[in-house]
Length: 412
Image 1: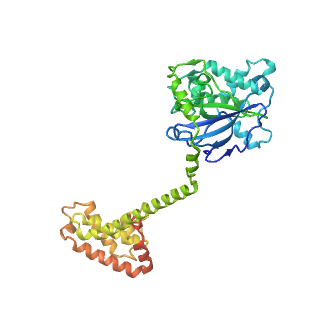
Image 2: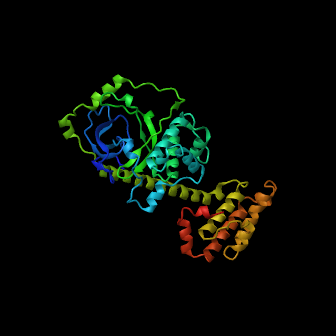
Image 3: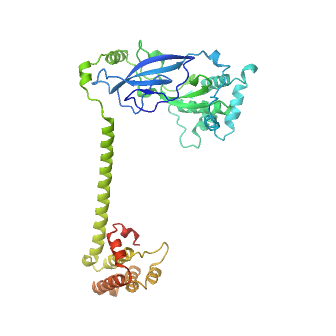
């Protein structure tokens, strides 16, 4: 499997044996950006080529693939799986949902095979494929959303869905028979759309299909072809467009222009993206620090400028900030009175500040005697609190709290 885009020649890490496969060479010219390259069936290598028409195509590459050419008759007696797999690998490709209906249905399907074929894995897989061909109704309108197991909802329900449902149903039924299988995704185009040696792959050709692993051959597609299609047929491909794009893809690029074209510095691009990310992170941190320090400054100055009605709230908040900077914060579930009693040794004045605050918060602010006295009692109490914390808490601890931009989040 190759998961990168071919900016240089890429070779599959574990290519299948070429026996029983036909080697196919093709050139792909992309009309739109792709994160991953694609090729025919089992890709062996990707090689970038000079873009034949940069005004039309975004990139081009050569692909060398190995398509299965072995007749199905010869696959009937072949074993499945890879003898070099570990137990974990084999278990991964034969894992099925806990729903016993998958195994029951698979056994019912293969019971229709001739007795001498019922134990042949490829015959079993083919029987499942043909059963789905006959039984399912194809439509992209049936999603099977919002259910615990969309595949089970499809397979044991109305058997109406599209390629994703049939691919997963095939894989789970095969796996329940002990056949290693997987779902692959890519594109599927009808052979009838081939124009000479050219083919246009459209976004609506996106497809999912099931594959089983045959010993000595590798992953082999065995796609479902529903006999009943409920959707209206799509618009046919414009033959003139295919011919025009094919001619553009076959154009010979200007060799002089190709030599002048600077190669893409992917390492430099990576460094630029890294620097950009670090710069954005630093800017975000600076913004967060500036916002935190601005908030701290405002909370310190607010008791001097707010109205007498707001003073119990902002004055009490400043007292909590001063205590938090000294390492004293109210615990989860602790009442305000209990907190005042707990810090009384270090900050005796905080009990009076708490009384001021609760008298206004729990009573009638309009008739509170503390409101009538204005800012005086609050300033005296806050001044006393600062002096008490200065005497009971080390200077180093108070400075660290003052410099900590996020200490206000510990004030509650």
